[in-house]
Image (cartoon, rainbow, N blue to C red; front, top):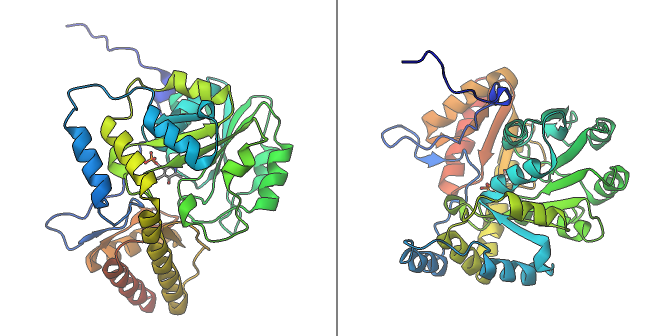
Length: 359
Ligand SMILES: *Cc1c(COP(=O)(O)O)cnc(C)c1O
């Protein structure tokens, strides 16, 4: 046998692997998964039914152009069809965005810590990640991000609210930033948690994109709409960005199940947004509970809370697990806890209280 092995791109060396939130072990102490920012509600009956019906023809390829879903999105968000592109979750679309703009030698700027998919999709394209630390208040440092722009910068991610801190950038600062970014650099506003925002000072990216050809908005059906397992997200962007996304899409990436469930979700939006309201109320209860226990909690506008625990991160996550909830530790930094079922949040608050007392 040959001693040789296939040559792989050097760019793949050192790419961090995406760490999915751990599930609750079937036989372990933890019953609740609060580690992936999923929606704790099961599918709405009507949405489930449309997916089940679509499953009856999965011997066929899906509609590659996602025509039904695109039409529904165009109407819902008052945008032209030509400004829409869908993908296998918004992570899929994020990867297409980087592939469309940046290759070896090009820079992709994002805050850090932020969404763990950004370094992966950047490096898969062979581009260079440029990580700009969050401020001491856990917020995007837009001035520093702007200062990091060079003539090799091709794309900037702004995660609003930011995963995993839940913090937001508000209208005035975001607009001032967008006004100063060179027009040939694409700014991607990742709004995966848009529906959970209650701060009116946080702008809707779809309003900001309208007169800014270098702004692209990413949205997903995975969080508020509860379709994480079906993998469908979308981007709103001007031509030629939207056209580039359609070119870089994996053909037939979005299944017919996902397309039908997404359309049904948009048509059941009122019921889904009621669930979001309940999660937002639960978020307020959790933040209040933690603050009452003496914790400092970053102000969150998403479906999770962030506790900066430093060296205690791993111990805290273990204590939560013993109490029945799996959270998401970022060792040495902090813990992200998804807002889930009230019973789960009770267990979490109790674990947090006990951990604090023992400090
Ligand atoms: C969860 C999340 C997404 C959405 O991922 P999907 O691929 O659509 O499931 C995108 N961006 C951020 C910041 C997220 O946290």
